[in-house]
Length: 409
Image (cartoon, rainbow, N blue to C red; front, top):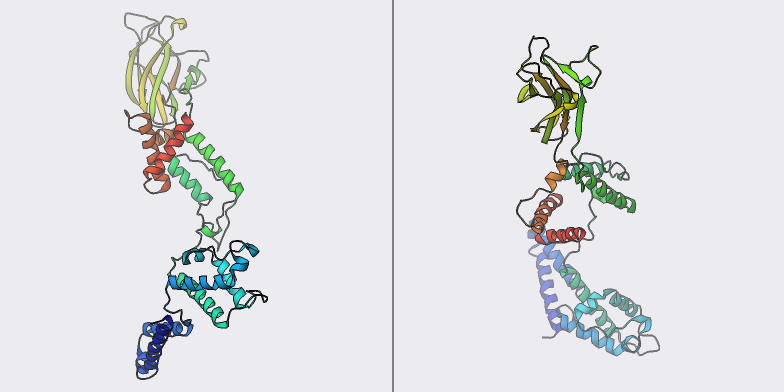
């Protein structure tokens, strides 16, 4: 059975189906579902748009028909040697190749349909040949449109608005400041500044992103951490204060206590120092107690006959961040004359010993004992998974690790 015969037979079947709908099935159609109505409607559309002798043609048969037409009427002007308008129509060897250059063939269809090609001085195809050529290409494109995978188009690149960016950096890196403060204002759509389609990325914004990244990392990770700071309270500024407080280098302590408030910037190891001397007045050395927030933590016997023999009395401790009260108390005060006296020069707090910011200790935390390469990958895998908001793949981590190793080298 030829393609024409198959098409005629299918038309007959469809017409009979349509006649059944118009006849005895009319009531069923009126009371049936929309799905039935749409199905028959599609059949009728297919019947009316079916090109004669092309309805059942396969891809190979369609290509052969097009190729025959091109060889007979087109290659003289658009062949391998003659390339008028830089168009070569006999360079295609199958239907998929033609579909890749669909614009070329659509242009050819327009020229044939309008009678402009072949040129009037050339032998002209019959009307049947031209119609078959056009119908075959039309069927080819129609099938490609119906069976091709849907193309959703380009997805808008998503980005955070300024508020979201600041909050994300704080949660992700642990640095609490406003890196997006100098970003360009976010565009607004329908009253909102977090709609993806209006949040574009301009060259200026990209420059600010790069500058913000440098600023964030400069705060979060210190390449050369500073030495531990020392906060010192001199004798004249120790409490209790008043008009009668000596203004010299030392402050005598014969009873009670001297104290000061010092702040720990972050949790860590600190060193507390009390500088003092105490002349002996009897066989028992003056003894001091050092307390933190009202709790005594250490006692010392103080020695030294004069200020030239002042000594530091120090202790190591772990402090929580915040303000703390440090005090020195004379534990074995007497009423004798001369009284036991401790001359206090200062109370100081040094630390924390690890001056890296908390963000750096958290970001670079890794398992001890591993090689440097494995520690690098452990750190980057954890950070990338948080930044991407999904588990980072091994390839992604490896790419980041290689970048880090190149920079270190």
